[in-house]
Image (cartoon, rainbow, N blue to C red):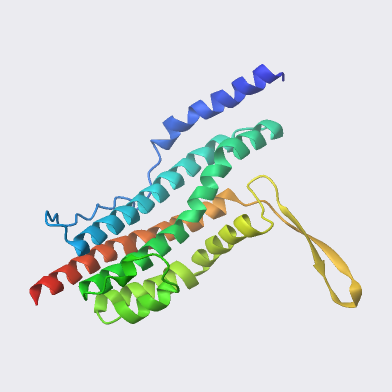
Amino acid sequence: MNDDGFAEAIARLVDRHPALYYRVELEDSHIPFHVVERDFFGDTFLEVFRQYNNALFDSVRLMIRYEKSLKAWRQIVAGVDDKVLRDTLVVDYVHPVFMAACDLPNVFKDQLVRGCVKLATVAKGDYSYLRDGRPRWFDVMKDVCADTPLGAQLCDIVAGDLFEGADAAHFRELHGSGMHDLSQSLVNGLEQTVSAVNYITMQTYIKPFDLGKELEALDRQRRRIQKAYLLFGDYGDALHEGRFGN
């Protein structure tokens, strides 16, 4: 296949994606946007609530879109027999979406923690956490948010579902290896030299990512994130009502 023929083959495969993508249906993905009360007097609490509510919803929406996109790509890739053509398609079009999707669980978690801390402290009249540079946000979250039932529930969700859970840990490690160390991809695996006792070294090989298994983990984590987003809206509303009800 010459260069023109190769490019045309890639273009035909790429052209299939939109039609497949828009037909993909994900279970439990119809998440309503939480509407934050409008305030025309520059209320800091409501402005912070609105900013983080929007950011968290965008992260949820991106997870849904990327998961749908990857499911469409998986169907397309499965029908390509030519290895060079298939690998080119995956590297150029599928892997970037995959990496962006795998970063979103960590992005959402960090947004949620900071949003909860800022809402809780501003509701109590402390505006110091609106400045950048505060360390150990989750430790602060446990200190300032756990004094209400919804805040305590969010602390548990962050610690469990969004950090210590097997899927959360997987995506956190994937992000760390991709940014700071050797990493595998959807096309290539990872070779490592492992030192053993008596000065013996062994060569190990980790297979490329299995897109099907990764999609299963993404789907599970998406549902957890959606649950956390809905709870964040309830938490902000409760803080707002309590603050103005006193």
